[in-house]
Image (cartoon, rainbow, N blue to C red; front, side, top):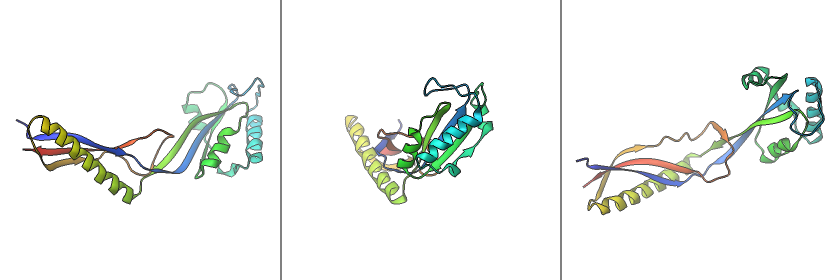
Length: 179
């Protein structure tokens, strides 16, 4: 008989956003904001940059990548712009600008969990895991013993992901001996 019990301890994930990144395509054949059709890529780009400047966006922060645009399998002429900033207000201003031929493909955030917070979440997840294990073990007239194994698969820093306004959880897989 297996003398272990495996559970996941779970606590609300606390992290902060340190950077935002938008990928914006400029496509001649795509016009998501109205009936006006502009057939010149340079003109679309010019109108977009003018609107950006009017709204206080630093256009020197944009990085253009025509190859990435083609990897999205667009059929028409166009290009991809990438923009990074640290301010939610700034990225919101950028997202509010509507120009024919401009399409926001992706908004990502770079999340960070500091070490102290990680330690606190780990402790809380261990407590939660032990409570879960005790609950299960009591149902089969067993007692929870020492920890045999811990697994934490979460990437803590230096990763980009799509923006998520919902609660996420930090999970720690714990295997206990049972007596």
